[in-house]
Length: 246
Length: 320
Image (cartoon, rainbow over all chains, first blue to last red; front, side):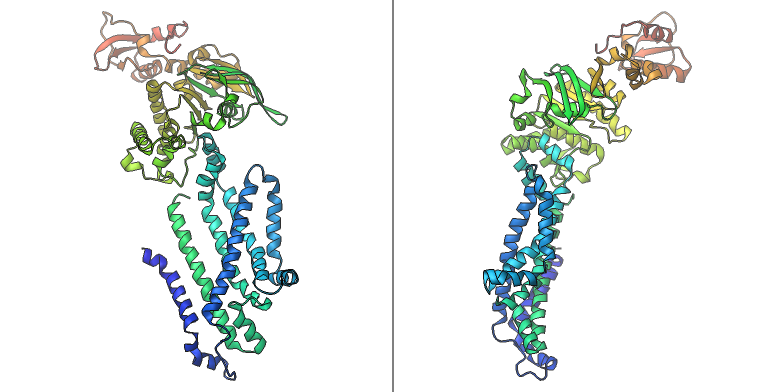
């Protein structure tokens, strides 16, 4: 039972680790892709270092987005914050209509080159799914349940923590999953503003006309995205089986 | 005791409840009856401060409810609603133990209380304790709802159309169980329903509401005998009123002692209602019944003439 649950994450994570550690073993294959190039394995930095930096950027952005997005969603579904409900929805949508490239272009003059601009871009880009799903999840909790909770003598904080958040959790988690998975791909853009990560081989491959580099970067990013996504799948399933009712 | 004195509730310019006054003595079962939108649920929710009243005063055990902390107030008032309001992500046992846990009972006491209540309501812990609400039938879920309301042993129970969503057979069964529980526990109950038969069956005190006002209140028999206006009369079933009144009157209150005549063939237990007696007479083409006790021993007889005659006399002494 638990074996089949973990099958996909284990598969993707193993493939990811193999590709990160053993990329050079595939040198003949990449020679076939790019026969004219002198060097076919990206070597300016080790892949596991790039992977680490990539995860760091996405992780920081996710932590900040989750805390901002979920708190904002909670705040505007409370009685006192309800005036701000439309505003928060619109701001979050605006964040996603802004192309990350444009955010980068605007952020670099202010924040300089490096990791910070890409974290800002990812935060803006990843906010919408989390805010939207937090709002949906909380609003979908049956109003009668909340009335019943009040009538039993639960305090608003108890209702939020024991009733609303647990019932909204699967929807909120789905939003986090979307946000993080999209941002794993989007983070590659950071390479254009000097944030070194798995986008480096791609950008460098495009600049030098070396398709092998592009394939290596893209492959690693795709495997990373699949690994993280399948981990979220496991998490969601466990949550759903615990909330077997909803 | 619950007392409402000139209580009104406005939602904007609309008046949902208009100047109602009502006294519910300790241990009595009061039913609020009326068509939908008459303000009966609003009245109920004002008592545990789910809705704040606009005017008048609601007094609970001698003090205005506004002097109580709303959270503490609600923890000492049981509350049951139509669709149960059970938390779907909690097991049955956890749902029932909610209020005792909020009151910080030691967990061993909570567990004991949950088991006691589940036993009382015919849901053995071993079978149902770990189940989730979606695994229960409508009747079972509503039993859990009642158990949850009773958990911290409140003196007062508010019930908002608790059996409204159940099929007729289950509904009747739960009504009977509630009547039995009430006979044992003597809670002060305020019960909202649009089903007049349910109200007649369960209530000591009947309050008929219309457009936010109380049209008439009194004992079920008093209302049946003297409905204040055509609206109350139609709620009470119009032409069926006589039968409803008969349903509230016990055979033993109207029987004669056994006469010298040959006892009638048809037998009816003494604690059945006159309505059932009439039905039996129609079925058996008989105008006389032999009344028997629980051991099927004849204790008296009942004649159609006597039932018809006494329906005119204001003599029915049950529940008045």
